[in-house]
Image (cartoon, rainbow, N blue to C red; front, top):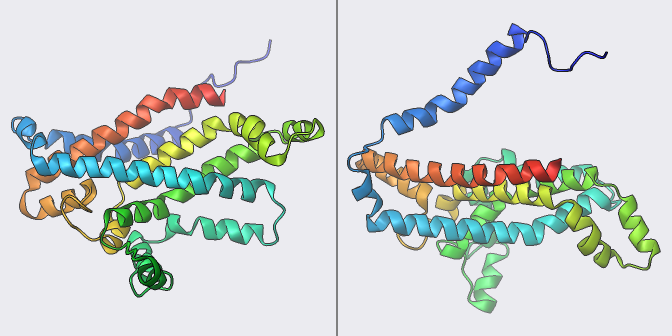
Length: 266
């Protein structure tokens, strides 16, 4: 008989740092729940500014995720399937927003899409479109910082998918576009869903690029992270309440889709 894998005593050299890592990740959210003003929580949740900020956050994060899907899935396909010169360098450029400080990302967006920016000056002069300090600017800022999460996830799924199915569809007369829609895309759906959820969660929590590029105007650009920051200076209890709302929404979405990822990956 072959021994069962995974059985036996766990090495302390791995278990101890693993437990410390778990504690490091779980204690701060637990502390947030412990310090929550539970008695006044219902009244705080029905305040108009809380609902307004939450609605704006959900709408902007969803729109940013849609933008990332429309642009990011083809970009991931290009990185995974196309034989491009300098593809490794291009992949590195795509992941720059992951390591770029969000505030720097906001400054970069202002430099390009501001009224005097490289592209923004023409958008304003020719079409009367000004993105900074608008709700559309929030969507742009969130999409900029969140898209790499989707691209990396979808590219990984494409690399894991067997390209022979696409080749078989091509031999049967299918076009590349038809093969992508009917063969490739269904096979990488779990990766697309996982990337979209991560993208949405990242967009929901975006702060630095948003406040730099879109500003802070109640009802127009004040998302939940910005509302938390403002409340922390004057009403710490309100900041805790807003943080709990963000925590519950994010964890609820991720937990609700977790089983779907697992079923799709197996």
